[in-house]
Image (cartoon, rainbow, N blue to C red; front, side, top):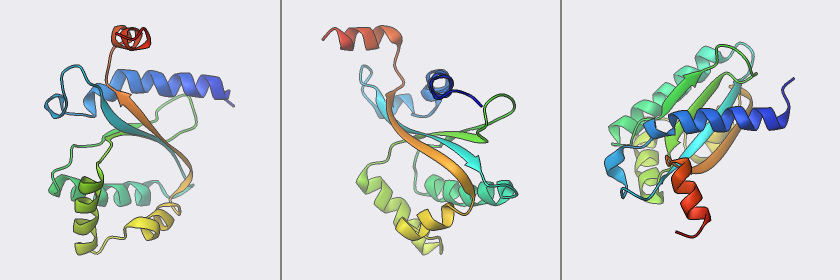
Length: 145
């Protein structure tokens, strides 16, 4: 079993390496990091394909609604998670647009979607982050520059 500190270090390392892929560079000011949602999923036994199909249906809605793509990573060795996703954090207006389109396509939203989703996972985490950025920019922010 991996320690919580090691798990956190691995997750942050993956985030730092890949967060630049999550947000289009033109969608924010040059010096301002964007906001993203990092999620780790441990899928319930026997539910991997169902989980992926469920996520792919929502990914298609996001694309049709003009939202930036989520970056997906699949576990191959090491820790006990199955998938890591890094997605841009949506504004309330963007989420409302996605939800309206999902409802139109017969997909569940809100609490109903949340409950439906939980049949596919054993555990998951969601963390909102700022980025991508650099270590130098973080030092400057920490020093008040």
